[in-house]
Length: 77
Image (cartoon, rainbow, N blue to C red; front, side):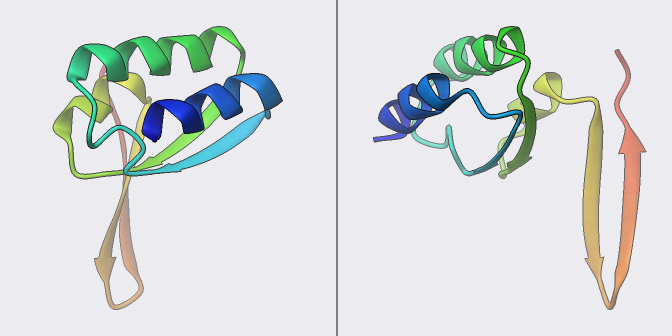
């Protein structure tokens, strides 16, 4: 099902996409291939997820700390 959702994303090619646990059931290799394809198509992705492997596909992490507090951290290249 998750791969089908990415197929739809590739077909529509939006400028921006919000992905909520979009690769949780996939291997890290498949995750990497899908994220690279999105980047090649020029998409800006906002990902919500628990997998630490997502960090390598993003430039910034937004952590919501509760009570209206948040932290924005730039990831190293």
